[in-house]
Length: 143
Length: 283
Image 1 (spheres, chains in turn green, red):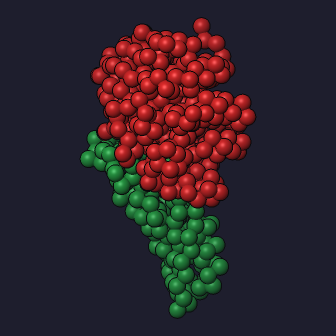
Image 2 (cartoon, chains in turn blue, brown; image 1 turned 90 degrees about the horizontal axis):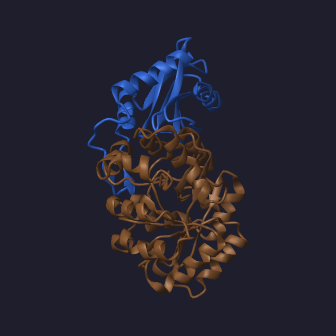
Image 3 (cartoon, one colour; image 1 turned 90 degrees about the vertical axis):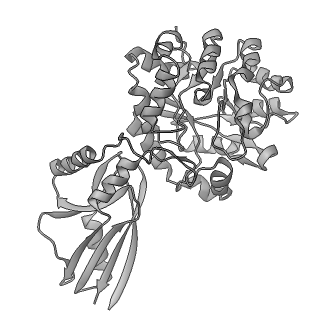
């Protein structure tokens, strides 16, 4: 059995946005040579997320807007304070909470060397505190 | 639209060329966030709806044994992107401080002077430093002073009390002086000086608790009335973010959310900065 971990970067361009990374994940899976197995996609940032939804711009906007309603950026949060671990104020609890809601990873089976997913499912890196250069990981496990 | 107060401390390309900048950012300036490509800085400005940013170094050679960006590094960064406006910094204790400033302006093309009395450990009204201020006036460049409290370790707020700047504004009326961070917590005292001295401006880069929207409203609409800015100091207020201690977008949204009139916002975000930079005469 093989386990391969790949680190990828994405430059987000807005304060909040969904970046479709499906093609990148599929490329990593194909290059791994794994025929049967599974793949995880994980963000390493707590003010971002990884999620799966249909690849439509309208839905992308709805996801971002709905998360903003659930966890508004300008909310009244305990996190709105100086953090000496960072040398600056926190005040991005809204971004962290969106990350909690959307989750930090996605999982798919691999069969026949390809990701098993619905025809309309797309994998997104979700930016909640951009623009930033972000890192995410793709781990392929199988044989 | 200009952000008049940024520190390019987390720019990956510069840290790759000068690795010690990472330590300086982390331990001297005290910002612990991850470095980002230059593109992120520019996207920050885009998202905030701004075109340009003033880049500020601090010469802490005497007090910390390093420079929080040298004048040459600021000039180098400005050559990488025409959206940047570089300022110089000088150790005010240097006997040749006026000459260093003259070279930074004349040879490197820098367009202002940044001094941080807290971390540079000097009282700005000490007469020993007036030749440096007079040189700035002669060169026609503004001086942006850190004022009020600072997060930098070991840097004390006592050096940045607004009363320490009155002699400069009074004695050098031809010199444009900017007190950064609204001189917080002494906003009222700083505003009083600005009300009296037309050559003294304030920048908005203040964030010390809560979030940008709530803090800026507290400092600019509760510590003093919002009408102060709208009616009396509209030509003496500059938008500044203090990036990367706070994202440009968050401070821009916070200042816009105050409800200042459109023409006042135009002055704060653009015209006042352009006037100080010698780009435009504002009536």
